[in-house]
Amino acid sequence: MTAVSQPWRLPDDDLTLSARDVHVWRAPLSASETRLADFHAILAADELARAARFRNPLHGDQYTVGRGILRILLGRYLNRQPQDIRFSCTHYGKPFIEDASETLRFNLSHSQDLALYAFTHQREIGIDIEYLRPVSSRDQIAEQFFSPNEIKALRNLPANQQDIGFFNCWTRKEAYIKAHGEGLSLPLDQFDVTLVPGEPAALLETRVASDRADRWALHALLPGANYRAALAVEGHDWQLSTWQWPG
Image (cartoon, rainbow, N blue to C red):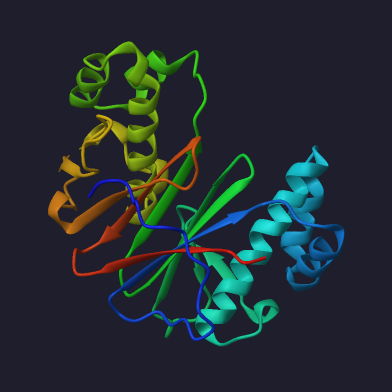
């Protein structure tokens, strides 16, 4: 799939998430003092403690906003009060809702002052966003984490496209490992994704014994002019909607 060209729309009041839906929300991580206080009021004690540990107060505020929005969105889908939602994490750090009967799956990512949230039912999902910037150690990072095929594809790009190619690759790899659920215990060089600008996002091959490339769909996202993002979803029988956080 190529990058999303559809607009990030404000949601309808009666927005629902069907079994075939994948919803991705875009939200800024800035908020007024009043709104920040509202988010504080719905966070759990461990979330408030984590926000307070950030050395940079701006980062603590962004974390508070990000978790507050997550709770509000989950509350909307689950028809619960945001403050009543309880989270756990897998052994590999992937968050989930503490309710064995709940079919909702979600994932989130942020970069700079922008966050993305992905939601679906009964299928694994992962999302990643990165702010476009020069990376002085780009080639060294690629050598360490990309597969041989990806390194070759990156080197073959014109010099002025290599930064975009790098972030295409990185976001797609991150989205896949987050959806797969094993985090960085899954070696990043054990699967191949597309990275050429303008080329459809795809998981080309996986050398992970417990997985198959055709199990997953990758989708490139354009959440902002200076961002690249990717979505990984289990299966192919789904439809994507992109929403703008109205706050």
